Image (cartoon, rainbow, N blue to C red; front, side, top):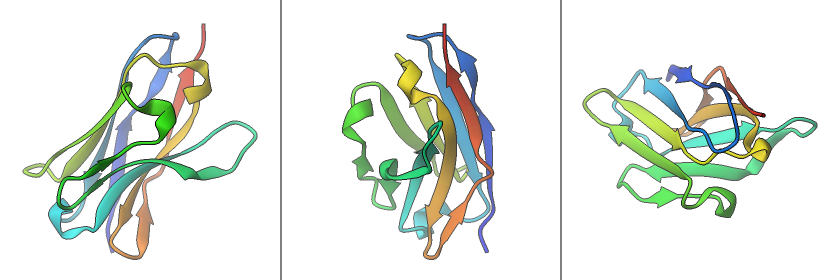
Length: 116
């Protein structure tokens, strides 16, 4: 069993920045890939939207956030981060940390609201 504890999130104006953190209860290099998924208002969890990093360090971004979001990790802390810059209203949603061990394990979700 893998526990994921998320922190960060909140409300910002368009153009603002937020950083999400996900602390993992095991060595993240032993996990196939770590990802962030999101659930936007009126839709379910967007399985086709994700930002991820593999155990080998390959980063993957949805086209909608390339150049604005950055995923990183601190292997000493077994923590991954999602730096979100130049946020847009359409980025509003609940962001979930995911560990694809497998099976998938999920964090509790963080609300991100981008509004003027």
